[in-house]
Image (cartoon, rainbow, N blue to C red; front, side, top):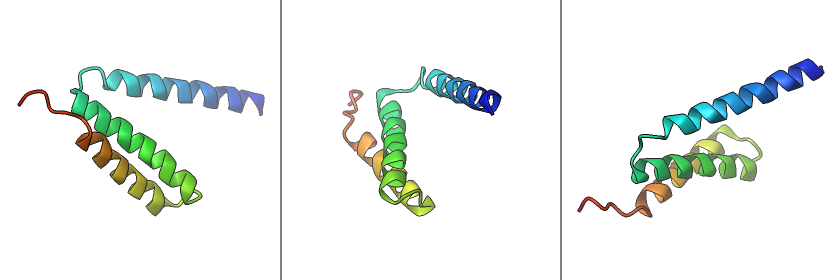
Length: 75
């Protein structure tokens, strides 16, 4: 059982590192949209006790907020 827990931790760490590496060439607006969507998904899942609809709704709302609050400096 401890081997499975250790393997799960390593897999989660690897997935996190890969996710952050994928954000390296994003614009600030894209990065903040992704961060907002991730935070919204976690918040939605917590508030709705893991409901898929709540998680997706939270991700959508968080992504929109992350996108809207970021100034577009290319104007």
